[in-house]
Amino acid sequence: NCPNRCPECHSPHLREDTGTPVISTIEEVLKTNKNRCSCILFMGGDDLAQIDSLIDCLKICKQYDYKTALYSGFEFTHAPKELLKLLDYIKV
Image (tube, rainbow, N blue to C red; front, side, top):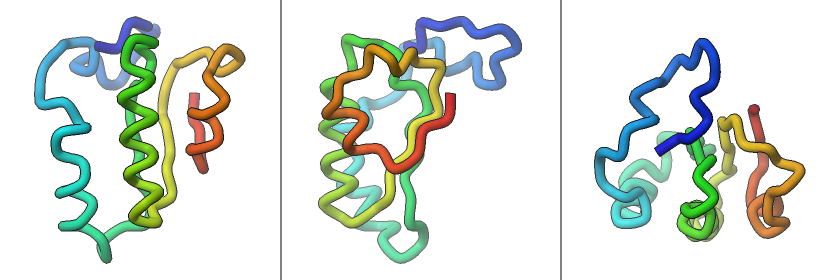
């Protein structure tokens, strides 16, 4: 549900409302891949209506000692401080 419609977007499929909510599967994915990676990257996170869900996912990642990253066109000057505290890396 990315609302940005950035010019030359490399992932236009992220504009669509499809798939399973990450919050419903993230813990199992983290457990299954514990020794395979060190950082979890979230793409999007631009829909302000979904920020609370993203924050919940980031908290779960931190409980499993993962680094966290967000690749987004989000305007971070208005981002909730709680979101920023949970991110190790941000790419806009």
